[in-house]
Length: 210
Image 1: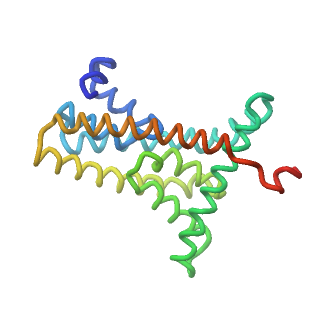
Image 2: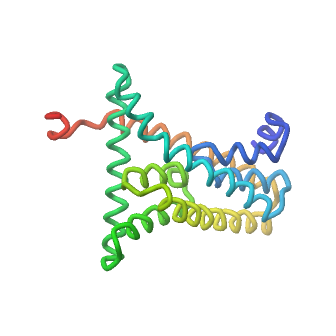
């Protein structure tokens, strides 16, 4: 997988950067790829962090306008509504989890904490893309999203970077190839499951009335 991507793009610097922009793969896959092609610890982490963090800017500003546009298109409006409900549900779930842990903090801080924790968990269905979507549906302002997303992404990057170093210390670069295959496979499986789950979601009584 590492060799395939490297040969496909023919520039490991841009290959790492482009991979870090891809949803579900994001920083996780980019770091593994960068270490697999021989980039150092800090180069791999820095380049992957940069690409996967700046992507939150277009997501923040375009998510709701794009969903609103899709809701006006007849053959996709139902699915667009379900995607919106999915993110609203994730936002409320994230908020509730943090409210139980930080009861005496301000509402904005609790929302920011929820976004930070969500982004900091280095799994395929967590990260900047979904974390930013959650922030949008929590009603956070742009300037309030920057710090939790950046810090959460940095924590996730450090975790993945350290795990990659452990793999290299005990095995070889070849093991990173298998990890990258696993990340891509897991991302595709989880994406399909999520799409099917959203598609099959039945509207509630409130939604039916609307």
